[in-house]
Length: 344
Image 1 (cartoon, rainbow, N blue to C red):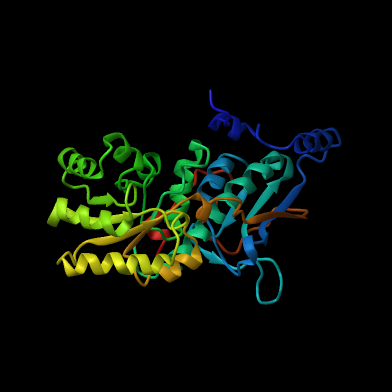
Image 2: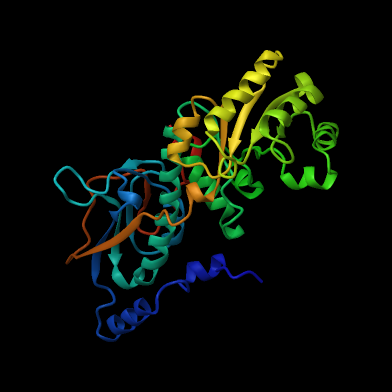
């Protein structure tokens, strides 16, 4: 048994804070459970004082409220928003209107669903911007709870990353998972040449041959070994240790590029991963061809600080506008927009 809530527990409101349940009890006892309210969900702050964010997690919020006697208006998945409008007021990303007791206990999960996902999507968008036009793959699940793997991959894809390594995330997104090879494979063979050749012999041809070149020798030496061993079959080489090697990593990449080019391997790409952030990506995008980013960049404490603001209203209003993701009177919501369209 894993220490995570089931879908049924989330839908029952079992993940909420106890004070919402007590609020329900008090309102019911005093005849106020049917009080109609309009709740606005806003971002009171963004991580690291970012000026803008990318909204995601709306589809799960809509699913949680499906069948409840509420009206919901929300910005679409993938929307870029600022926490405050030009007049200084907070920007609502979702409105929920209905009897308060019908969604009181869902305030906690509603915020959780949108805050974490939007934080990841925003970090991914900033990484996408820093990398310019270079491909960026999400490697961001290995140091976070595995139940979050699909969420992290989806949110990163909405934010603009080009692919995911996680099997579960790729299945959710209807993508082919993207990756290279682990150090463990090379260590078990005890010889990088044997490991690269075995990979080439066994793995299907539609998988790009990307050799990990920093296990036993320096990057330059192993890069030369890889191109001489695999030749034209080699799509790229991967450098994964920028944080543990001395010197200017961009210069190391330039040296590797030079060694490849003078041997005629202009087609071989240089894929960089390991401890990358916005600053290093921006610098390395001039010399590297593709990147893999992990949870330290995408998901560690990068939470949009969501906030509920309530207005009591004496009657149910008739909305004069409708935004993309909506539930009206508890009706079944439309399928959420696919990540590719949300990324446009």
